Image 1 (cartoon, rainbow, N blue to C red):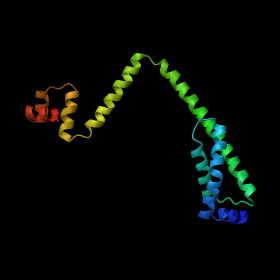
Image 2 (image 1 turned 60 degrees about the vertical axis):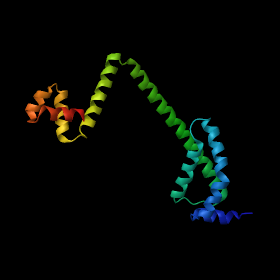
Image 3 (image 1 turned 180 degrees about the vertical axis):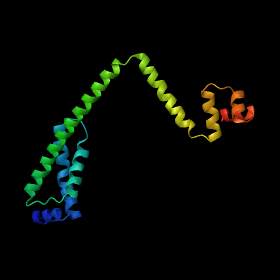
Image 4 (image 1 turned 135 degrees about the vertical axis):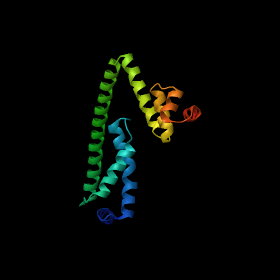
Length: 165
């Protein structure tokens, strides 16, 4: 049988053995409690672990195991409600964004995709060597291989090689 005062003292002084005992003793019960509150939404294990981490990092001291037990269950209850509230807010934001997205015309959607593709194209072009960048950008602007060769002072074959690479 474990001495309650010894465990409580160990918890208050951040003794790892006492904390392992605390974790082993309460973890499953707290997870079950949180799961009942969340009703299958979210991950109760993560929430309970966050409670233990927050408690470990705090300077909170307990006068009795009863106070500690009350604290753990209350913290789990409060954090579960916060999680539910945040999830509802998140879902309502996604719903409103979904409604706005539905209102976008097909033309606007197509234009958005084109703009993103062009942006990605320029990101990849910027990773090329300088001479290849110049050739590709001039090609995008509509210059022919001959025009690019003349403007850059290189041969047409050099332009074609830069483009193919």
